[in-house]
Length: 349
Image (cartoon, rainbow, N blue to C red; front, side, top):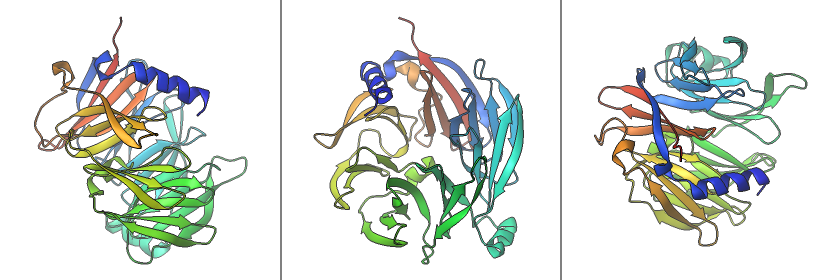
């Protein structure tokens, strides 16, 4: 664990959800579910939604400054190490945007699908880019719906990428999440109850495991795997946590998580402390105990001033993030089909 991780862990061991107070709320900021929240290098907040819009907010006032309209539903956005905003679409391509001086420029469009599927995807939403993961070497692993995993290499002295390799599942299975646990070795979740170990040095699946938990609903957060250390991988399900031993490539513990109900999102605060969001707009702060290999609850949002917009169980937390000690939460109201943006800050003591 590096110094930054230690400092973060120390902060979150002494701060809980009860230390935050509401700073501002934007109701109905998107007309559909918010698919992702991330931050530019300068600290500006970014939200994306299945309503096909990306909003970039002023880092001080949180007023909208930039609006990007896509032609397809947006599945996922994040910023790479160069500060480039990468957008995964419910179509057959990704857009890369460079943001400068309140303006944006498309610097590249990546098309991982073959030409046949690319043309087909213009008229059909069956094919989509689920997520990308920036690997340790700066390359991208792209999860391509009903197609496989595509790898793109970072071009030398450039902010663009070129095709490197791909792994075709060949059985019409869709990858939801991927974690890099060793050089060219990955753990990938497929469908609702299946995960596999992929060795791209051998270009083969070395092991696959079927688990008796429901993974599907957590996929809305696009984060199912959390690498805890060189041995332990934490897998998040709809009602469960599973700890996987990476060296043995097997499940070593199954933890039933009943307090929050259905898990809809999980956000890593620090090395071993997380925020877990669920249906009914509940949030809990939990800690992964490396010695016991267990999940312990630190705090939750039972206080009345933390119960967001409504108590209806059809509502869920679609995103949680923290930046500069501000907590950003995006509740999704299923009945109204819109999302709100709520920002909390540490209380003055």
